[in-house]
Image (cartoon, rainbow, N blue to C red):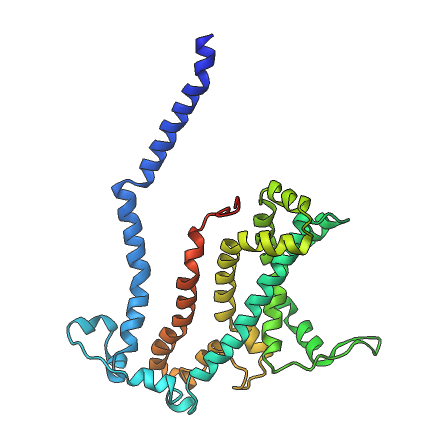
Amino acid sequence: MSTVIDAPKKVKKIKAVKSHGSDRAFTSPIASAVVTVIAVLWTIPTFGLFVTAFRPNEDIRSTGWWTVFLHPKFTWDNFHAVLFAGGGSIGSQGMIPFAVNSLAITIPAVVLSVGFGLMAAYALAWIPFRFSDHIFYGLFALQGVPLQLSLLPLLTFFATGVKLFGVTIIPSLHIVGTLASVWLPHVMFGMPLVIYLIHNFVAALPREIMEAARVDGANHFEVFRRIVLPLSIPALASIAIFQFLWIWNDLLVALVFAGGTDDVAPLTLHLANLSGNLGSHWENVAPAAIFSIIIPLIVFLSLQRFFVRGLLAGSVK
């Protein structure tokens, strides 16, 4: 009898020993050395880009960036050229207006996609209605629709509306060449993934908290605002970072919907033209790339603290 009673304890000890052994395998000096080497190799190109951004043009054209350790020579002329003078022969407009355009595109797209995604995820997870599962599966399947496949129909819809046998069913939105024509596709194509990720997070919230709120007389809006939204901040921060990076670094959507005008062109579209004709001013790419990295880096560093927050921190109160 004692053997049967002690069996669960022995199983727990065996599992603890196995897990401890597996943890030691991932914390061994060899694993640490491998991770360090990978991190260094990953950092070398970024470091070379940073060094190149501060080198004079004649040094960039004649020698590699690693020669800076033998003949150190630095200048701010490259940054001045791309930020304020437009970067040589490609124009007199600097990068600041294009960065503002990128922010005007990225911030609304992130806020709308994450906000509507959270509301849709809560409705699909906690509000019972017919065909809710089918809608969720359909949204999940929309992730497989290629963005490139929908660019031309979407551009036609924005420009001329929807017509059937010559009859206008949906009128034209007349937004081609505006900021809205760039961030609307990002919201549309970002929603399926956002809803899928947030749905898995919201659906895992403790049912006891929801039921207690409903017993206290809270409606769905109050439950969403006072319980779901505060508890979902870690997940929202993670998804917002990925959405921000995806939209900030996008070139294809801006190239199709921006209309080729500098008034609404984002930073990526300006970077594509920064090297000049036939790449004659490619020395401008390094300082411009460093500048384009700064804002996403600030966003990541400001939101990464939410990653370490507990899911139910303060929920009992």
